[in-house]
Image (cartoon, rainbow, N blue to C red; front, side, top):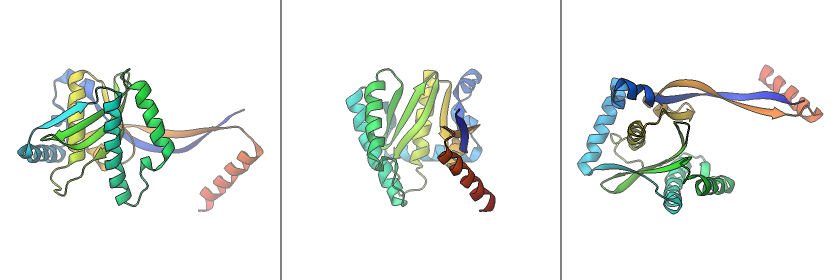
Amino acid sequence: GVVMRELFRKPSWHVELAALRAAGTPYLDSLSANTRQQLRRAVRHYQRRGPLTIARARDVPEALAFLAELKRLHQRYWTGKGSPGAFAYPFFEAFQHRLITTSLQAGAVELMRVCCAGQPIGYLYNLVGDGRVLCYQSGIDYDHDPKLKPGLVCHLLCIELHLREGAAVYDFMAGAARYKASLGVPGPDMVYRVLERPTPRLRLERALRGLVRRFF
């Protein structure tokens, strides 16, 4: 008595870490010449300022501190583009606090901080399970120098860390952002579906949606 309806689908990209490890291929060597050049140049520019480091939050208080900085950078970027940003909704942030509090020690979530010369350039929030690292949220400190590419560098360091640690897949999840296509290979589409009871109101809604798609 339940009807499944597809809302939409989005492309996804990922990095096959297990395949790279088995072949002995460095991650950078798997990328296009253009992306490889951009990343190597960005790393060199950062290293002139000081060493690049990546650290995983060790406990819940540190993870929540990382999340607070991630939120600040995330909101600054998206509100600057006229978007409310993910953290504009109180429920979203409360859910993240609960998820981190209950799941960090089990290794189901991780928060990463990437620094140059001790100064944070970005934070990554990942979901982890069954050998997959799912890139869930990020906050990047974008520099005025376009050669620095802080977002790409943060993912580079995180990918290389998980390549060393034995993860099978680094998954950028859904969305057509350009950086995902640059850093990964195409994966299956992510499909968004809803389950609905066949009530008169919902049947009417589906009929109206069909008319809108047909004529507009």
